[in-house]
Image (cartoon, rainbow, N blue to C red):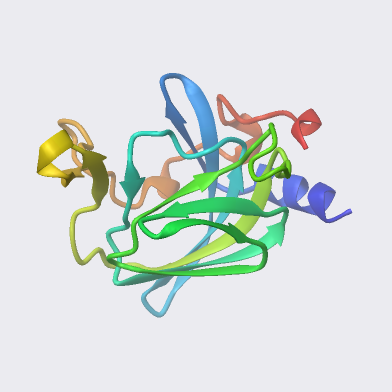
Length: 171
């Protein structure tokens, strides 16, 4: 029942499909902005790409799980996230959905969450990448020549019109 509501609601919201090598792994829907806070609805349809743990550009972020759960790889190991996740600006992590057993348990094929962040970035974000003897090195995310798109949701397609949105049969 909640999945149907989430699919119906997300179909009406501005949508950004986040992909790696042409494979979508996250659908981000803009919900609202108020008092310096932004709220997004996230639908993970795959794991964060395995390109190193990443941080975020905000001082903090929180994720309230609405449906499903996931594994989170961090600098200190692997843990499960079932209901809530709080991240600081220096938290490096990777969301993992495991269609095959990881630790002997399959995760759901999709995870829905409310992702709540400050509206203002405080730093660049990027990845911790293993550089052999140099250890892990921070590599900033490259937005490309246009830079970070400000207020992307003002011109984004609605979820139902977004190219790459996963169909209903995925969960």
